[in-house]
Amino acid sequence: MMVRQKTIGTSIECSDVGLHSGHEIGLALKPAEANSGIRIVRTDLMNGAREIVADWRGVSNTRLATTIANDRGATVGTVEHLMAALAGCEIDNVVVEIDGPEIPAMDGSAAPFVSLIEKAGIVEQDAARRTVKILKPVSVGDDTRSVSIVPAERFSIDFEIAFDAAAIDCQRYRFEPAGGDFRSEISRARTFGMEQDVDELLRNGYGRGGSLENTVVVGAGGVLNEGGLRYRDEFVRHKILDCFGDLYLAGAPLLGAVQAYRSGHELNNRLLRTLFADETAWTMVDAAAPGEVAIC
Ligand SMILES: [Zn+2]
Image: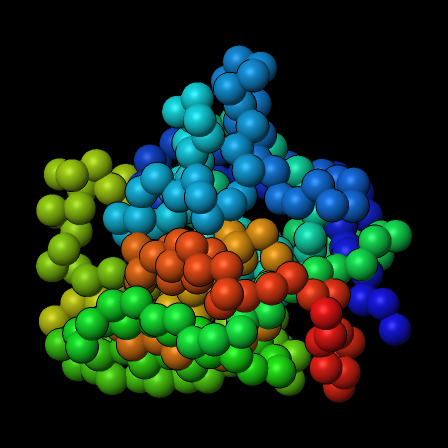
């Protein structure tokens, strides 16, 4: 049975500050044709320079968040939480219009974007969904940080983190979209940072839109946010959310098992670059329905 590509049923909007820029930014998601992929349009820029394809080749900055650029130098920052929501909802084709340089922070997780997509409705299209099937192991990084992907019949992310802060410490979680539930297991996990890093971040022009409304802040005595954590291990779940979003810049879902140790945006992107540089490491196949095995 053919697994079909999907888009959203109708246009839908939201607005909020950008986590790093601090600008108030409006975002609209619009339905898009089959095989057109995920395209971001900066409506505040001139025609000709304003379209940015959500693609691993366009990643131009990975410090603290993933920024993508087009060949005219237009950029859009902090794409990973929206990309994770699109991956989790299995949206293949959509136009994302924004009137500023960064995806709105919302609550620092992917849940508000999942709600938007669900409100707009998810529509099947008359084209087969394709996936990037991993044919041999690919890994990047070293003993201190790494991420790898190996052939597997279903996509999964197994992530481990280790932080000095006692509130985080070591956490490990494994997420498998086909057997699990992105919405309940992963989507609500918020971005996080250390209280001791805030001044330096602001000095360097990052985190200007950050607040306890959109970031879990860890201080010497533990989590500063009133209400505490949404999951006991919210930190590692957010790292999975980031990784899931970063890897959806492959342009299609991956069919392989991801193993990550203290990985971040830079390594996640380097994994895609290393994978696609070796044509013997992957092939495109039609997506398989749950329970079926993907075939060429
Ligand atoms: Zn994040």
